[in-house]
Image (cartoon, rainbow, N blue to C red):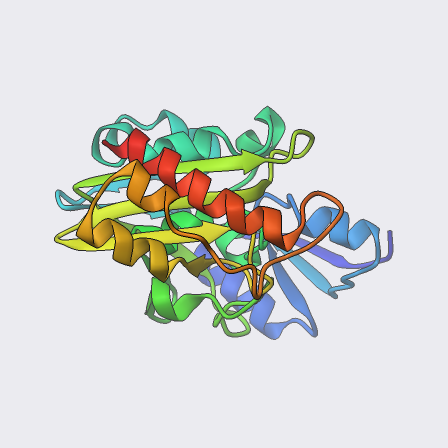
Amino acid sequence: MYQFNYQKAGSADEAISAVSSAEDGRFLAGGMTLIPTLKQRLAQPSDLVDLAGISDLVGIEDGGDSITIKGMTRHVDVANSDVVKSKIPALASLADNIGDPQVRNRGTIGGSLANNDPAADYPAAVLGLNATVITNKREIAAEDYFDGMFTTVLEDGELITAVRFPVPEKAAYTKFPNPASRYALVGVMVAQTGGDTRVAVTGAGQDGVFRATDIESALSSNWSADAAKGVKMSDDGLNTDIHASAEYRAHLISVMASRAVTAAG
């Protein structure tokens, strides 16, 4: 490792001030990506500001027709929340299948979304459920938040304080996981909310999470597993790597969407 300044913030305001005043400050949430990145010298911030001690950034609130999950809420807490399991069971199931127990007990929803790993699960939930990302500066619609692989519209010193999810009429998330990391080779969230049908795909796109509009159109006309599976996805813009080709990922999108529709009912 190299030398850097470490601070453990006691409040969101203190953390924001510390990062903003540093030469190259970074927020540290669960550290699931940042710590390995530091070890490999792929990032060398001057300051790390630890958010783990900020109790105001932890918790889940029931808003009736929505639920709000605060930014430092861990995956395991989302998975085990009675509110989430009751209102959006698809989201609880998604959180329960992120990585391994170590990741679920350290990783946070805010950290995952700020990092925007192209194979992460939460981006599909945010885009598929049409969530709103809440920061210390503004509220950002899901459609406007993601800006490419490992990239979002967050500005320097902007901190995710919460994510608000509208309660869907039905929803489910299904993924084809890497057997080692449990990252999604392809993960699909399907949802119906107020007559709006959304299908969000993670793990497949070269630019990160995206909406599968062809499958959305098919499901809007006929909400069925066969309708989803019958859509032949193009492999344009999809990833090819040692785990799967773009062509195979295109096939998996329809298959995972079909299984998600079956799970959603």
